Structures are given as structure tokens and as C-alpha cells.
Length: 255
Image (cartoon, rainbow, N blue to C red; front, top):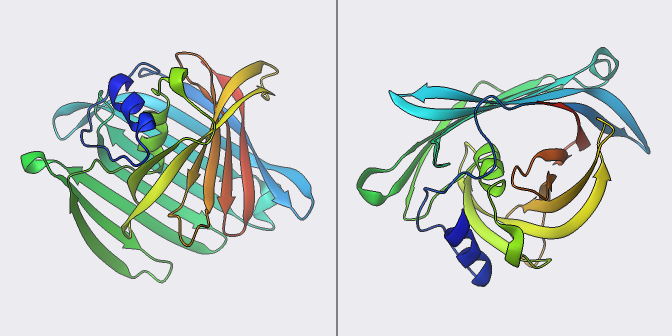
């Protein structure tokens, strides 16, 4: 991360001119388990679990890292709203995005977002497919000089941030592939806070928000994540702002 991210924070408006980044935070073999909660009216209800793993992998003959994030609602919540979300991301050891897939069963609707990244001639090419709830498939292609990300690869990238020069409210603007299109979104540093996770440990955390494209001065927060203020930058809490409500994932177990 190092020099690239420090420069990004020092500039008022920035784009990622290069993708390769030094990974200072994690390695293959990481496995994290989270308790999943959902806000039902004014009550927070434990509604399932989330599992995050980082594994050494091979992607088209080259060394890679595979991120998996699985959300599974329990029987109690299934009676009201079923959620089975599976997110997969392949990145290089230098955190360059290669592939992303999100299969989402929410209620009775199933959708699939899929993204392929290639980098011919120094350009970032993003091929996207989206399968909507009616079984209709759409395809999109995007080409740019900037590095593009998705929900999992940007989380991996953020874990290698050097927080030394952070100021509350600082923003990084970056393009993110959703499966349907590439959208300009923003990562905001919110500050630091001590937080006690479900593994009974208290962590000193850096807090970030992922915002949707800023339209007419309005920000739409997609998720907020708490990472430990150390070299590992372990995600200990993730808040998801969904169309049907708010879900939270609290760290329960880590290796």
C-alpha cells in the first residue's frame, strides 16, 4: 500500500493509476467466523453466521489468493426472510483484482453478479455479467486507466492501508464493479474506536465507510467496517446497509 495510498490521501481527488500493492496485513490460511445480526423493527436479532476465508489458489495458471465470504441465515430468520449470500474474489498476491462473483438469495429472489478483470496494454478491462431475479442475463464491458475493485477486493486493499497520516473524513474515490456497471464510489476514514467483539476481546479499531456515488451532495453508505489498528488490520465488525434493512457481522472466532 505504502506510497500509493499515502499519496491518495494527500490528494483531494485521486484515482488508482497502478494496481499492484504490497500486502502487509494477511496471508493464506486466514479463517474468520462472525455472528450475524439483523434489525427487526427496533430489535436486533441474531439471524445466522458469516464465514470469511483466505486461501492460496491458482487462477488461470498463476498464483493467487481466494477470498470467500458466506452469509447464512438461521431457521429463525428463514421464517421471515431467507438470506444465502456467497461472495468469491480472486486477487493476486499484490492485491490486484482478477475475478469476483456474488450469488445472492434474499427472500425468494436469486441474483448473480460476476466480474472478470484483465490488464492488456496497461489498461484495466472489466467484463461483467448480471443475472437478475427473472433469470435474464445482461453483459457489460468497461475499460479505463484506473484500477477497478469490487466489495471483497476493496476490503483486502483497505487492510493494507498505512494509517499514520489519516485524518477523519479523508476520502478515496475509486471505481467499483457491481456486475451491472462500474460506479464511482468512495471509501471514507471515520476515525478510531475501541470495540468489544463476540470473541470477548476488545480491539482498538480503524473505521471505514464504503459510500455509493455522491449525487447532489448526498452519500449512500453501503457498508461500514472496523479493522484492528495494527499491522494485521483484522476485520472485527462489518455493518451492511441493505435494501430491506441493516445487518451486522461481529467477529466470533479467528485463527
